[in-house]
Image (cartoon, rainbow, N blue to C red; front, side, top):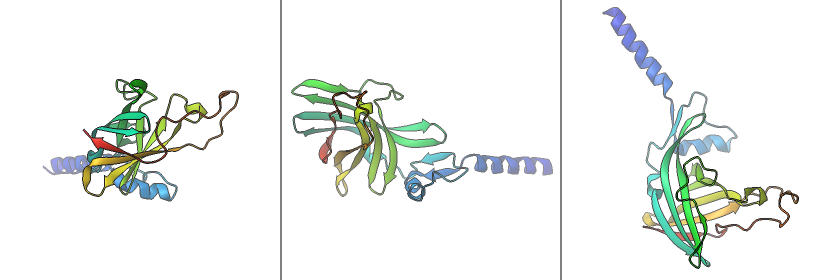
Length: 187
């Protein structure tokens, strides 16, 4: 009986030690001080379901472009399991598709992956078809109006990396996402 109690205790200890969860919203605190997740973290989890308000299909118009954007919740299994959003999109201008990633698999380079949650803003890492020529950056999303889960704002802050003129003879690529906030409506 004593051996059984020791075995159960050991199993509980190992099980608790094996899965160290860091709430998704706490990760930004470690990043601000130049660190990643604390040592021993095995899962950065959306324990408070903060990403759920973004999940779904959103539509909006900016300039002459129509945007249809879909966010899904996903668990990334890289070094640490991490809950994040994946973003697929279809952008059209005058009925002609400029870009359509709606059928691409999760691991495709044009699928936009979540990066971090900072208060009420979720940040995603974006790399477009012309990423080597500057079509890349961070996409920011947040509710357009407090407690209104039907409107979302989205904008891009482009990467400010050096562009190699040999690889980009036409200069910096045009961005397909707006640098000013656009409003999307949940469908």
